Length: 185
Image 1: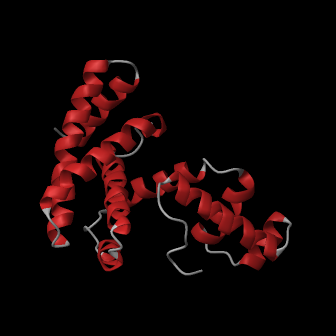
Image 2: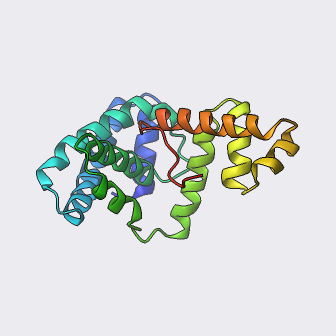
């Protein structure tokens, strides 16, 4: 089933069509199985672990389904969730080298997927209060320094850094990941 058809089915499910929702989850299950198995094979890990990871991802998709609005690829959205569940599993087993390998791997993302990712990041950021969201957008997306951000929003550099740190920590919790800033800043 194509992404567009699957998205339509999933959205019907969100509108109350239980049969459509069930069918969309079954289709997502198939796609996620394939995606997770590919990641496990690439990491030289047992493919048998895929079932648990996919189940965790489907549980997360079900609990976060209200956040999906259909403007981005459903498969990309679901694969991002599955990827985070895979990372959570690796983290639980202290397999940091595998996590790093997974993060460095580029699945040949096309420009449409990049745009979907940008939209998703904006949507996730919108879950934060303005006091956290605005400094993160200015520094991490627009590339301003902490002093430029402080001048733009009329506060101190220290306050900006604190808000960015707290906002990123809150985002990590919302996404089910451990806190920390991957880019080192």
